[in-house]
Length: 90
Image 1 (tube, rainbow, N blue to C red):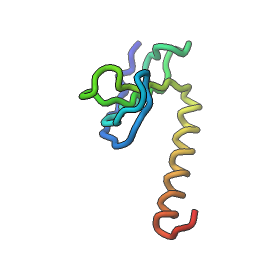
Image 2: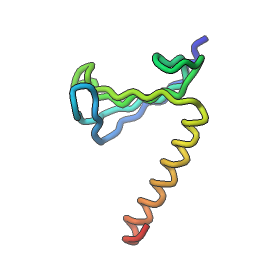
Image 3: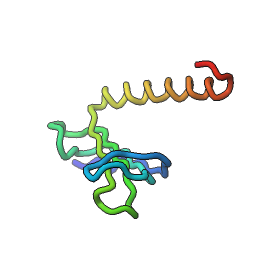
Protein backbone atom coordinates (compact mmCIF):
# COMPACT_ATOMS: atom_id res chain seq x y z
CA UNK A 1 0.00 0.00 0.00
CA UNK A 2 1.27 3.47 -0.85
CA UNK A 3 1.85 5.78 2.10
CA UNK A 4 1.48 9.12 0.26
CA UNK A 5 4.10 10.55 2.65
CA UNK A 6 6.05 13.24 0.81
CA UNK A 7 7.72 16.52 1.74
CA UNK A 8 9.08 18.94 -0.87
CA UNK A 9 11.22 22.05 -0.63
CA UNK A 10 13.38 24.27 -2.79
CA UNK A 11 17.15 23.95 -2.40
CA UNK A 12 20.21 25.69 -3.74
CA UNK A 13 23.30 23.67 -4.53
CA UNK A 14 24.73 21.18 -6.99
CA UNK A 15 24.34 17.48 -7.70
CA UNK A 16 26.07 14.97 -9.91
CA UNK A 17 23.85 12.82 -12.08
CA UNK A 18 24.31 10.56 -15.10
CA UNK A 19 25.24 13.54 -17.33
CA UNK A 20 27.56 15.19 -14.80
CA UNK A 21 27.04 18.13 -12.47
CA UNK A 22 23.86 20.21 -12.50
CA UNK A 23 22.29 22.94 -10.37
CA UNK A 24 19.85 21.64 -7.76
CA UNK A 25 16.51 23.38 -7.41
CA UNK A 26 14.17 21.04 -5.50
CA UNK A 27 14.25 18.06 -3.17
CA UNK A 28 11.46 15.58 -2.46
CA UNK A 29 11.64 13.32 0.56
CA UNK A 30 9.14 10.48 0.67
CA UNK A 31 8.49 7.29 2.57
CA UNK A 32 7.04 4.89 0.06
CA UNK A 33 7.87 2.02 -2.28
CA UNK A 34 11.47 2.20 -3.53
CA UNK A 35 12.52 1.46 -7.10
CA UNK A 36 15.86 -0.22 -6.43
CA UNK A 37 16.35 -1.50 -2.87
CA UNK A 38 14.48 -4.63 -1.87
CA UNK A 39 12.23 -3.15 0.83
CA UNK A 40 8.49 -2.73 1.13
CA UNK A 41 9.05 0.96 1.98
CA UNK A 42 12.13 3.18 2.05
CA UNK A 43 12.98 6.79 2.76
CA UNK A 44 13.46 8.16 -0.76
CA UNK A 45 15.30 11.41 -1.44
CA UNK A 46 15.17 12.94 -4.93
CA UNK A 47 17.27 16.00 -5.68
CA UNK A 48 16.10 17.53 -8.96
CA UNK A 49 16.06 20.49 -11.29
CA UNK A 50 12.97 20.02 -13.45
CA UNK A 51 13.89 22.93 -15.72
CA UNK A 52 17.10 21.09 -16.67
CA UNK A 53 15.26 17.96 -17.86
CA UNK A 54 14.88 14.38 -16.64
CA UNK A 55 18.65 13.78 -16.44
CA UNK A 56 19.00 16.41 -13.70
CA UNK A 57 18.18 14.03 -10.85
CA UNK A 58 19.99 12.32 -8.01
CA UNK A 59 17.95 9.68 -6.17
CA UNK A 60 18.71 7.96 -2.86
CA UNK A 61 16.77 5.15 -1.18
CA UNK A 62 17.51 4.40 2.48
CA UNK A 63 16.27 2.11 5.19
CA UNK A 64 14.38 3.98 7.89
CA UNK A 65 17.26 3.44 10.36
CA UNK A 66 19.79 4.76 7.83
CA UNK A 67 17.58 7.81 7.24
CA UNK A 68 17.49 8.49 10.98
CA UNK A 69 21.29 8.31 11.14
CA UNK A 70 21.58 10.62 8.12
CA UNK A 71 19.22 13.13 9.79
CA UNK A 72 21.30 12.98 12.99
CA UNK A 73 24.57 13.48 11.10
CA UNK A 74 23.13 16.29 8.99
CA UNK A 75 21.80 18.10 12.07
CA UNK A 76 25.17 17.77 13.84
CA UNK A 77 27.10 19.04 10.81
CA UNK A 78 24.75 22.01 10.37
CA UNK A 79 25.06 22.94 14.05
CA UNK A 80 28.87 22.81 13.80
CA UNK A 81 28.78 24.86 10.57
CA UNK A 82 26.59 27.49 12.28
CA UNK A 83 29.09 27.64 15.14
CA UNK A 84 31.99 27.99 12.70
CA UNK A 85 30.26 30.78 10.78
CA UNK A 86 29.54 32.62 14.04
CA UNK A 87 32.94 32.18 15.70
CA UNK A 88 35.45 30.91 13.16
CA UNK A 89 35.85 27.71 15.21
CA UNK A 90 34.08 24.36 14.86
